[in-house]
Image 1 (cartoon, helix red, strand yellow):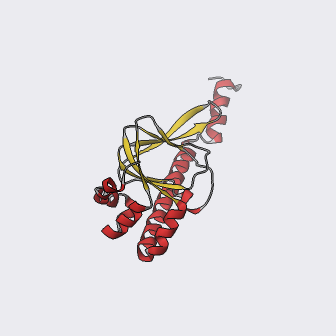
Image 2: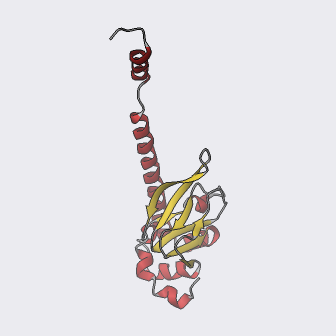
Image 3: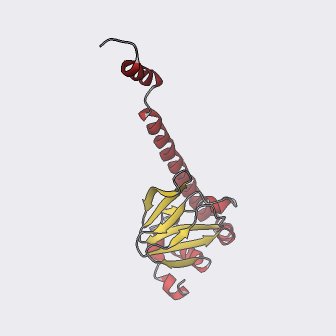
Length: 178
């Protein structure tokens, strides 16, 4: 964690985080007063899949990897990478649910971490900024949902139709004389 004086130098980098883009300098100062700036080392896990956490994160600098655990093969499956300006942990703002992915630093990174309760107090103090913040969160979640739907649709399209499989098996093992 870093001291408040150092946080003040982070006003512009914080403004580059998509969810805080519309905040005034004063609002960012207030947000920094109720949040933590974490220095993360390469390889360090920030969020572990399955844990319950009330925190929301914004990446100030560095790159992180998002992975999910594959039970069948007991390995981590790469989902994507996030960099400066990106956010994760949005569900932690609204409810106590298990994290759906593991987030690990790919390089040294600085990450803004805000607790759900502190964020709620901030939103009450700054209603207009809060509305803008929540709209960016909704947009972010809808974007992630759309990307997930596109991925599912792509996977579905790449499946070979059953008729083609039946024809191939029939051609290979059927009683046809070729």
